[in-house]
Image (tube, rainbow, N blue to C red):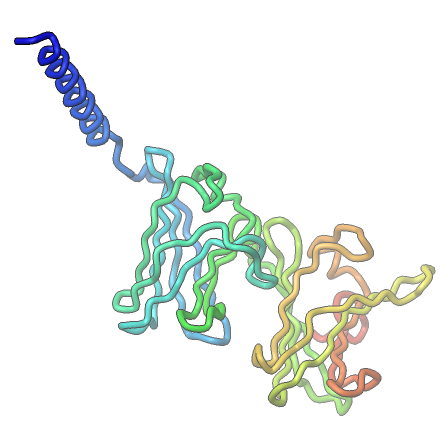
Length: 281
């Protein structure tokens, strides 16, 4: 046997041994076994669907997290995209990670993750405090049909609803204030009757005694027919000062909704907080 043949056989043996070791290492990788630590969120639907259900985050022993979505009222053949997005569902945010679609046949989606789309490693504990929401979207239009606000954006359960009145004195809308775990406020405004292709300006007015100007005005997102008469807002600060849910409800305030063509005409309004005309239910 020549030296060349001996060298070739040794080289081939080394390659085979290395390949064998790599295979063994791959086979021996620890599986995504649950540790028993998990967090469950309720899925809330928007007024574009009647989807509901739960989202469960489960920690695994290998450092990954399994996100299991289970929805009710799905349809066979319609698979909804699921995306982990930043910020809150009220204001929307960029995609942090695409998850596996929800299968319309059984309403389920399961995705095991250990990093975000940009390559950032994320643990179960970090995901539990992720400043974002899980968005379930329409497969054809991308419209948000259901969601779960996550971590610090989750609602505490503290909320209050104020009635909004037309100039004639009839209740024609509602303003829902909800506290988030991070202390900020989710504000949802709804006008009962709205014409098609309409956008109604809305604003929050705060009366401050012995301060100039005496009334501070803050623009809110318009109420639109496209959103079926809703406006979704986040209140984190007023006049560049951070304000909590409890502090907001101790102010003398009013919500005003204006006519689409005449911004001097108030079509709905209602007091909030310590305003003497505040009417809650």
